Image (cartoon, rainbow, N blue to C red):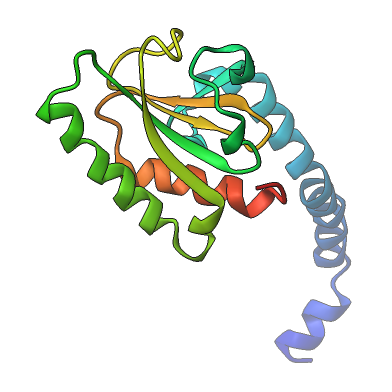
Length: 166
């Protein structure tokens, strides 16, 4: 009898294999469930990257009640730069990044308008901030003065991809 045949007929080896099989099945089916529960319980201890790069405003603010509201812009996404008062060459130099963000959005840029408003028009924002307003007129995101334009483009593309409005 050779080694393979001896292995096939040895009851101790068969028994060992039968003891491991249920544990493998438990691990395969219960492992993802236990891992998901642990991630949920200890979610504050992990630092996963978020989808948005700006600050998501919760609850969103209706801009229709603000002094700088213009009904002509409803129906499109709006990228707003809050200019300081008085507006000098520095605030005028920040308009080109808005143009670049608008162009970087790509084929969907016809759905986005950009403009600058004073801090008096939207008093909840600081001068230098960039805001994102949805087509229904809700201020939904805010970006600090020196926000990375790539992050703004990323957020805007994601919103345009999931939105059918505007």
